[in-house]
Image (cartoon, rainbow, N blue to C red):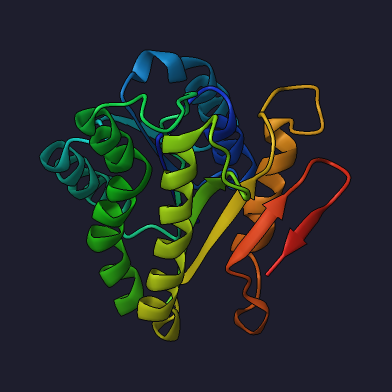
Length: 223
């Protein structure tokens, strides 16, 4: 039995990761700003023998996020797999956003990830095992997606920082970079992408990758 946590869970990629990365008997915790959107995946997972809990929290709200994380540990224990899937995806060009809008985007895309990591990775490292996987994107910065490009670059740096800090203590930190729009029935079907999370999570320590770029169903590049 394992414990799987998806932060920033939704009906698309977050639901697919919860489905693909868990098995009957596992504890699954989904954290979202809107629990109602998760009813279909909760019903599906529950009917297939998973124990599912949904917690409402905004990753941009530090206090609320910390309360939710403490609650999920109480419910499911120290997780075996954590996926940070929260992100603020929108088009904006340089100079279009206010200081406050950029700060909020950065908080969702990066700061929430380090807030969660600071709460969850120490007990995972004390146990000596676990994976902390982050949903990346924008492998090439694009001025049409300025705040997202900045945020995903920050997330990539955070991945390496956390890997350096916790890797020697048994925690596998990696980013799965999705290089395209997630859409069912395409080369970027969420279930296909979720298979990459599962593959990375199950890697042996000698084979750990810290960045995987998913370029569609036809292939990916690794590093």
